[in-house]
Length: 80
Image 1 (cartoon, rainbow, N blue to C red):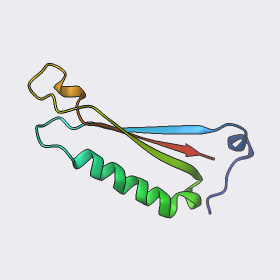
Image 2 (image 1 turned 30 degrees about the vertical axis):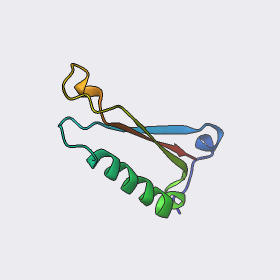
Image 3 (image 1 turned 135 degrees about the vertical axis):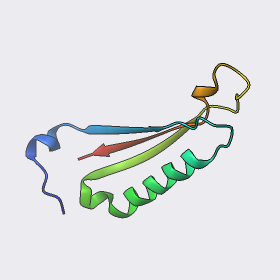
Image 4 (image 1 turned 30 degrees about the horizontal axis):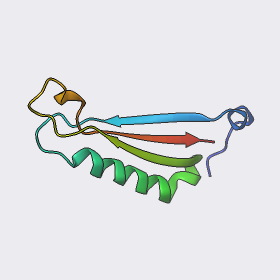
């Protein structure tokens, strides 16, 4: 186990990872996010991670100016 500072126990820390797909092929960001969450589920407690969640957003809009926003995946980690 990783030793934790008493100060960190008093306040929750959140890390947000945002993955964005920039090409017409989609799915890679979601696969990577699921792999990260699987690693957190397996090793998170030893690293002080209390929970992890995933949120997907965006739509297939490659023909519009909003293409850069499509396929975003956010994974948030709550640290102890």
